[in-house]
Image (cartoon, rainbow, N blue to C red):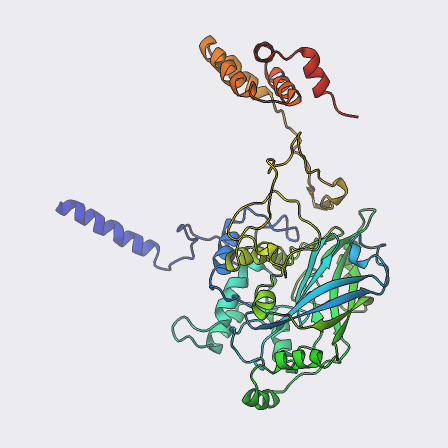
Length: 508
């Protein structure tokens, strides 16, 4: 026993030496090789789902608050309408931008980013500017800020950044020592810090601030041509900000002045308005620039990408219930419609996962069934159940594809193809499918008893299938794996060769 204890002590001592520097690990204890860069296809390709560390960080971060939002906790929401002012169908299939004069209902939520739900609206902080368009092709969200850039360019750093900006886990107080310690490692944050520490870091009101998508997106037209776009909202009330002294004076009398101002203005019938502009760049333009245009810490200079007016948004109605609309509203840059796709921006790629994941945790799996989040179009997905499900599903077929009740894909809405060096991005099958060879090799490796049992077991369940088409196709599959197997099954199921050929032939 003594020898065992000494051995164990020696082992523990050696482990302490090995891990004296306490390397960063995943939740299962594995050392992290790179906590600064997401796993991507090349330097500038999309982020891969197999980056387990990235997904784990974002999933854990999304669940840090119950039920308050981790970020953008303090906010005010308003209903309104967006009117398209120009036909943009030459650049995008998106229905909301295809005709001048077309109107689309919207819900907008303004917010502060870092501070908590009851915090003053006079604090220095970026302001969220999230817009949900209820289009005839589903909901489309532009989820941006009042400032046109951000602190970081890779989503893998988002939990670290917010942790540094939030109150200390020891003192529960925000501390410049903590967030500047973090930013001292993040030189790309200099641009955002310069903006947020100017007076633009304290907008005078929600009405008097501009908005930006921050990220670029892809617009796809009917010819599958791609152009990259950034969105800018320009306040028709003008842009106005507060100095530290002005903010302190307002806070002393009303710590929720921005919400009060927005609501009172709408009550008086003075509906605030914003013009929506886009900037456009082709991928071929990227190399001409001295900055990478899919870097969220950069703006697009107007000399490189002029502003084009798309439409005007008017906010005209206060929600009937703050909690049911403003608090339960859920926005995501992954709420996309045909004709709009995400760009390869590394920060955006992480947000595509993180926002929906946060809402499922904070509000529930069926958050999109709530009135404020529900699309105007009837949904037809196979997602089901979960807390507060209210879909009223009446079909026995909750999968796809099906030969009895299919929900067909719309081929023209496939993700656009792209190339990253020698690698292509496309929704397509693998090249070497070879679906039947190994099944046949396995069948031929069985002795006669196992072959007979296999046929008996398969024909037992296939015999219960009512559709002759399904039975014939399945027999055809097994015949292609091994002729003997196919013949035995066809006899057991009374399926003729003509039946197999009839249903296996491609439909015209």
